[in-house]
Length: 408
Image 1 (cartoon, rainbow, N blue to C red):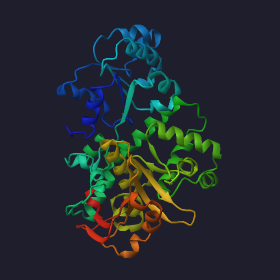
Image 2: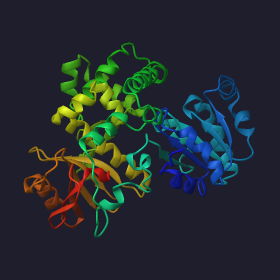
Image 3: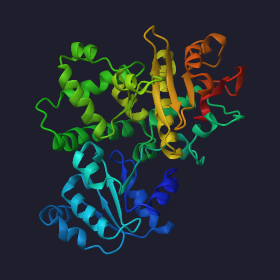
Image 4: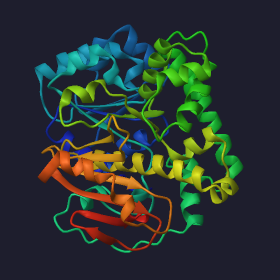
């Protein structure tokens, strides 16, 4: 079994928090992870609410259902029985032992106001994304994130050929997709996965008459991952009203098909009103939506660059989630059009800017877009990094470096 980098944070939360909720898309390995905790000192009874009998019991008499369990318990797919949340709250208020309830959900329970209200101050939430490359390769920790904020980083050489990169992009990180080596069988899995989410999960959460619009919207977003969300452009291209796009995007994010990256600004207010950047949550799924195969990714540098940028963005999201500490991943765009692909902001306000370049060489021009950012941040600007297809880290000035994208 591939070791999940989030395991340490999950065990730490269970050691001091009464309710821990592990959220993430279907088939990302949540059930495997929580059942593996028994071998690490956290034994708990496991109940899945995908079981029709258990689900009926939870919905018909939620108080009695919760009171069945005196010791630690896992409720898998908690979003299917939100009726359990108030009894869980009551049980925790009577006995605040840490680790009593471990909940999992494949639809983001934080979108349900009653959840946040019922368990405020009693619950810690962690997100499990598909495998990161660091996990697949057996590299411990949070991948590149710790290196980005190191005082004097010494990035190791890391060779990554175009052929190996393309294989990495096509496989993505879902455990089942990674295990399938045949490209046609993997493509069939992605297709079935999308159909299941749209027909089962999203249809169950919302009454959408034109469900067939969602795949087209997802594909259109996939083509636009390099820029901020342009609702007017999507509306015009797809014939979907702006109000419906807002609703659909929220639903796709709720089932972890999309990840929103907020727009960075030195003041909090403008961050909240600027358009977010949307990333498809798995690069293999992105390739499926774009209908690209190995040949096209090898031959088309522009297309490969688009996919590579999205891949790096999600790997940063995964690394920040493992590192914890209140860091966040955002994007940067000025009114004059200066852009930086990704910003990682630490809880103390320090910021690293990251550009992605799918070429084997870098020159000084690739660092110009960091100038405005450095002027705005001053000492809060830790460094600007261009990730490229070369093998070695190269310094381009104080706080400016090119690093191998193979480090991600």
